[in-house]
Length: 325
Ligand code: ADP
Ligand code: DP6
Ligand code: CO
Image (cartoon, rainbow, N blue to C red; front, side):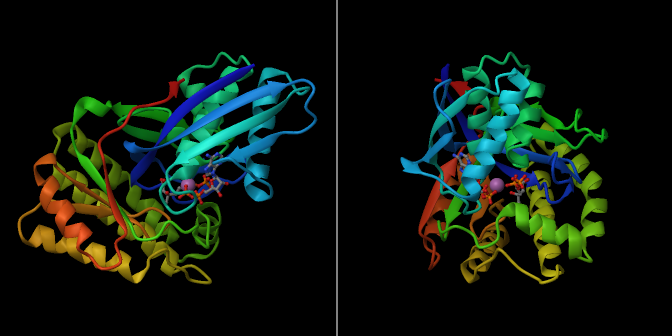
């Protein structure tokens, strides 16, 4: 009863920001992402009858506390679905992505955990069912089931039975590049879960955020279909700025940005002023991702690496969906 799965992270171009149901992990709005080939998690799950409690190792370190709690709660759901409450698991996970730094480790982490644990326990699930299970670990993870461009349908049912990801365009549809600009791999002070909750509960800008989503979604889907970097980039950048604006209007206010985050945003603006189509987006963390086309690769790398405070630039292409190893 053992299985290994690999899942890649995804970068949200239209952000998931806020839950309507925190227990079932149901979002307020649809979101849309691109799975990245440069960052991933590999997880092995082994179920045993003789074990009395789950063990979770992340990058060879035994994990306790809240991160352990999220993994066992997730495994409880898998055990319940499979009707095997008698089993406990050992989980070994390796993040080829900085953990909790705004690079979506929770997305690749829980997608890999969901796939490996479902297979190890013998659950026969369809992709939408697996995406729904995955959602309970971390919302953004339900999109990492698939490669390429993926939309998470928020659904309308109170029980969450129609809230799962659907593929929009495969990885080979369009060779866009995403440069991940690393400023800091340190764990964020406010995890995504906590940050979006505070925003929903207190930000006076939150209703405007939710209202703005349908227009963004329509524009970006058209842009992806037409392989139109300007449309996709402008829409994603504006959506990112609107999400981060909601945190400034929360109580107490907060921001995920560092001073270097703004320096990178300015560099991207400079590139555009000089005729290079490049656009930024930022998840819940200080690090910036820059979207551009392959012919700009050298210009982009040079510009980004020269910014004081930038530690590393890692380029991704559209990445694949789940794989079982
Ligand atoms: P990120 O920007 O990295 O997604 P989040 O705040 O969303 O940051 O989530 C970080 C949390 O995700 C960690 O504190 C941990 O609970 C969980 N996580 C990260 N990697 C894994 C993994 N490989 N397996 C299980 N859980 C993970
Ligand atoms: C800003 O999926 O990490 O990256 O569902 O509480 O685990 P939980 O949060 P998470 O939130 C991701 C927020 C985001 C935007 C996105 O990925 O869509
Ligand atoms: Co996350």
